[in-house]
Length: 262
Image (cartoon, rainbow, N blue to C red; front, side):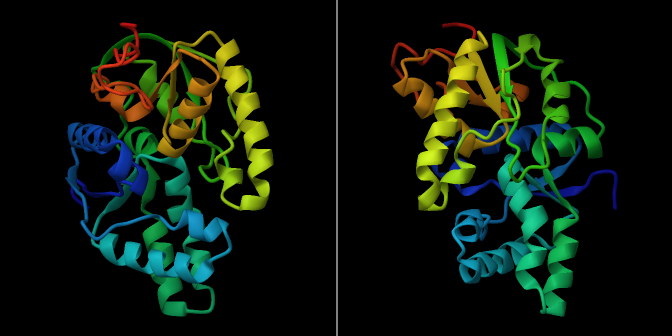
C-alpha cells in the first residue's frame, strides 16, 4: 500500500439526500490527511434499515452491491458511526454458508472505518486547522458504532474557539437505532425525549455527532421542544465548513447563522 492510500468514501444515503456538505467536508478532511478520495457512483444505502427490520434478503443484496463497488480501494471510510458499524460488523454474517462471499465480506469489512477513527487511528491525525466559536456537546452513537468517541474528541479539542462539554448521558442512544422496527417506536420516542433533556441541561449551544441519522432525529426533537441548540455533523466543524445553516434550519431563517454567531 502506498503512502497515499486510495480511499473509497461511503457517503451514506442520508448525506447524499439531505446534507451533501457532510460528504464534501469528509472528502476535504481525507484529502488533507494525504489520501486519494473517490466516491463510487453505484453506492446506495448500507442496508441497515432492511437488516434491523429482519429483511435479510434485501440486506444481503445491498451488501453484495456495496462490496462490489468498494473492493478495489485500500480503505472504505464513512462519515457515520452506525453505517460504518453495519458495513464492518454485520456484512460477513449475511453470507454465512457461502464461502466465497463470506471471505469477500470479511476482507471488505476489515478495511472499513468511521471517518474520525480513520483520521486518528490510521492517518495519525491529532489536530485540524479549523475555528468555531461555540460551546459544544458531542453525541456518541453506540448501538452499532463500537463507541466512536475518543477520535472525534481528539480532533475537536484542536478546533480553535470550541469548548467541548459533557452531556449527562453521553453514551445514550438518540432513539433512532431502536426505531427501525415499528414495535419499538414508543420506546425510541421515550429515549429521544430523555436524551434531548440531557442535551438541553448540559448548557451546550451546539450539538455534534458523527452520524447524520442521529443528528436529524435530535435536531427535530430539540426544535419541537423549543430549543435553540444548533446541530451539526462533526465533519463540517473539523473541515472548517460550518457556514451552512445548522441541520433542520432553513436558509434565511433567524436561526440560520453559524454556531457561535447566533
